[in-house]
Amino acid sequence: MTFFPSAASRPGGRILPVALAGALGLWLGFPNDLAGIPPLVLLWPLALAWLGLHAATRGAAMRYGWLTSLAGSIAALYWLSLPVHNVGGLPWLLAVPCALLIAACISSAGGFFSVAAHLLRHRPPWLWAVMLGLLWYVLEAVYALVLGFPWLELSGALAAWPLLVQGADAIGSYALAGLWTTIALWCGLALLPHPTQTAPAAEKNMRQNGKAAHNCRMPWRPACLASGLLMAALLLGYGALRMHRQPLTSDPGGPQSVLALFVEGNVDQNQKWLPAFQRQTVDLYLKLTYDALAQKPDERPLIIWPETALPFFFETNQLHSPRVRQLPAITGCPLLLGAPGVERLPDKKKPAVFNRAFLLTPPSGEAAAHYDKEHLVPFGEYLPEWLNWGFLEALLQGVGVYETGTAIAPLRYGNLALGMLICYEGIFPWLAQARVQDGANILVDISNDGWFGATPAARQHLYLTVLRALEQNRWILRGTNTGISVVVDSRGRLVMRGDQFREQAIWGRAALESRPSLYHRLWPWPLPAATALLTGLVLWGPGGSIRRRTRV
Image 1: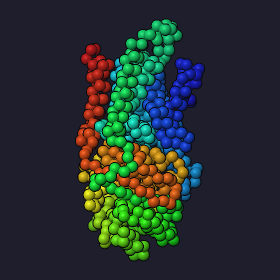
Image 2: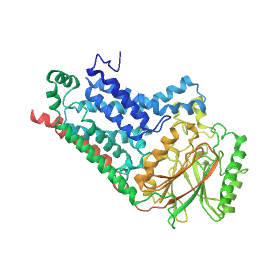
Image 3: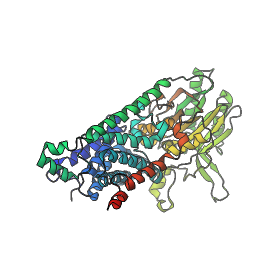
Image 4: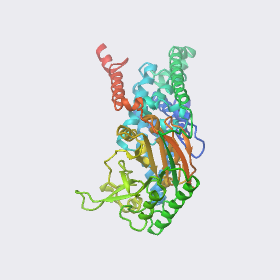
């Protein structure tokens, strides 16, 4: 059984080249080991739609879409096997299938999209593109909610070029992805056969009637192409205007700003949890911090140490924690750090462990507030009870299973209201939305990307987090263990960016914002509105099932 037909079995032999173009667009559009070219990611939905349009059956459309997405996803997400092998100790023979399984699950969305393109092929071409754009929006949002791994969202690739994603402040990253999908399809219709014809019928007409069959579709093509170019121009113009109104600056200054000092220990993931390295880790972070502060003795920055910078229970450790508490007391600087937290809960027999961010404040150096990670990483921070296997436990790195945090209020110090996100919480729009809703005037993401090694994953993670700045009109302070530490302005631009895999301390300044974005004010209505509109078009739009039944 061959999933992709050969040139002899399909019209023109174009199925395989189009599928390869879609997979390459997915891979090359996201940060990768070769060359990231963000606009190429639009080849992905365009290819999926084309494949669905030309498929002879729904089953064929599902295969084409799923396999195309799977090929691109494997290329973009190959790094998923690294933590399973390097940290979990699983042999490559078993680690690689783990990554393949995740890629296969998220690629099913591509199959459903191609099936929809096939089923909607009788709709007017302009409307066909609109409906598929709405569907892309809904699929991205639903898959993020259900699977909890929205890593390959279209806007995450485009975010590397901030001009392309400024519209996220109005409609959010998922809806923006749907809009760019519609634009790609409108423009692509200049090359695609008429959606109201199946592929075999279109090819038959072309062979029998030559240019006549081609010209019969021409009235649609200028309208679709013009719509695509106009909408792209509006999006780019809006983006250019927003970026012009807030010029790029690395020093916003003024009382409504914060100076931050990011400290990267570059501690090896396989060593950090070993008790023998605890003193060495604390010494390293303290030295980097004191040395950096000595260069600017008049400054009192917010010091940021990354997620689990201290690989021990900070509240109960009597050997190293007192030395850390002395830092704010001596310098007069607040210190935000990541470390495991532990406490006894009434409904738990054993002490509960949390992935915690502590805010230590002068003059006492005690923890004035803390935040517990709300959205835990499956297999990295907790295990489902039915999968409590030995090799998976190794991924939890010594502290055991984390509990889910519940309090999301900002951590406050002076005029700072820090909306906390830990690690991959930064890729979920609704978590940043909740932080700003609770009064955060800046978002802070502390992360440990040491899991990923020297792969594109750290850059992919970074640009997914950048989208939260646009959606919420908030600057982001992002501190990491191995990089990439950045300051992101509210236009999604990197105003400060550190290196990877270096022991370093980096200075950056960010503005404090209070104005909510349009997207923030509209939340959560865009998604149900888009779902209702798509449903209405399917049922009552031109060529809809109810309209056809009524005419009969």
